Length: 213
Image (tube, rainbow, N blue to C red; front, top):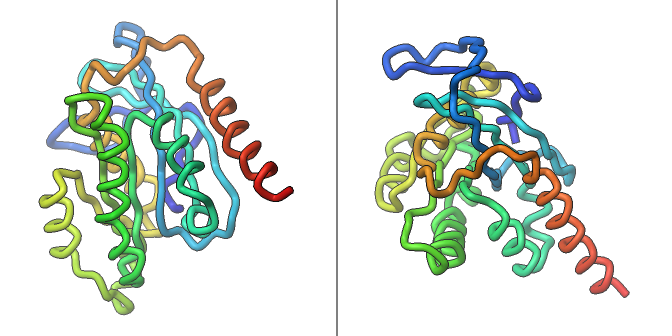
């Protein structure tokens, strides 16, 4: 998907200088959250599951990130997608600026996420929209303004990233997402969230096996 980060590396940002900084974070409140990354990536059908430490506003947040490629989403039933959405606390939806179709499907996906999550809570769902492949500007078919307007209309964050700046771009995206996660959606760090991924994945793939019989 292009937003993967080194495992368990700590990073900190300040509002006026979003540069990468290593921080010890011994006094930070340690919490964790689940992030589901969905959308265009063109990397085949592999899934990526990893964790990353991020320090935001005095909170050391351990993000458990489940990156699902678009090619896999398109071959699955809605029940499998819904299980992942139920697991997640926040969402990153990625489209390619060179692929209009990957952009056009975002409103329906976001509506589905909000219907699934906000029906259980009065709080807004933290969602960030990311335009990928900004470096391929000569092939652009979706303008930055279109991306910003869509994000604004759906009350989501918005970023554009490129392969050339994938690492720092990903840090900006996940930092921005973390700022949108309310404290009530964060759990004290107990090391249980990865087991939650395994449980959810088992349910998803068990359904696939049953359907294939």
